[in-house]
Length: 330
Image (cartoon, rainbow, N blue to C red; front, side):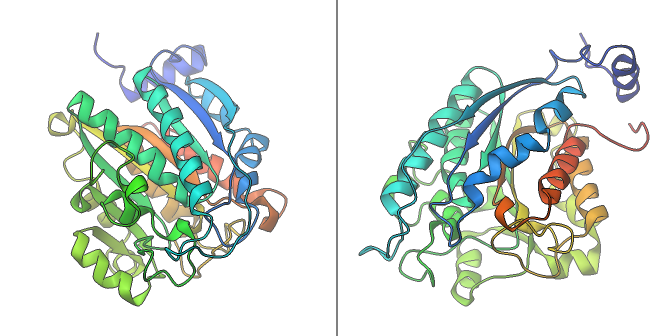
């Protein structure tokens, strides 16, 4: 049976909000830790998204939503850096392994995992699971990394020792081997498979590491000069239509990607990020590909938020990832 057209989807949902429930099945996985971050509070991110009614919002689009609750893991010891120059490394490794196992289990079950962080350290575990799944299924992995920061530090050059600054480098085979090898192979992801969008705070050494890894990067200057539409067209090239049929698209969405004027509830705000309409266009164009197959939502810190407005904004944006639009398109 052919997939329903956008117009047919709108008509079906108008008649019965559950009519398309079998089309997409997602699982919400809470990973409540800020063990890799420099500030406390991201551990409350999963529950802030639940308070903002993420599950109910997705269900309105005919999505079969399961919420397996929050994973368990070690507490945040707030300790000093270890001999590797990293803070809370053992705890970060444990949380990443838990995230990996939970995400991989959902992929094996044929469901889309949505990891609710937690800090961005956790993307090492979630994307390692996706990479393992893609190797097993023969799919091509494409990672979109929406972030104000490159997250390409190495232990020996990290200015803080916080592990939320190293996940991209770890996934590309650098850094502590237990993290780099979590997918079952090193590297989990080739640099060319990762596209970073929205960067505006990159350490001096990271700039050279980005070049060495071969990452595709559209910083805020590129967005300013070209516009979000042109940037997303390049980032998503080859994903739509028959040529993208074997692509697994993973989105790792760091809340600090957004301008702090609209999203204050995150621990590492950087001025000059995408505004509301730019962020919506980004999500809508991802949705248009029909390839989104796994998602991270990280670095939401309700302790720094104002009446949960950032969580509500994130839910609004995730709705666009699942087809919300002003008009029927396509």
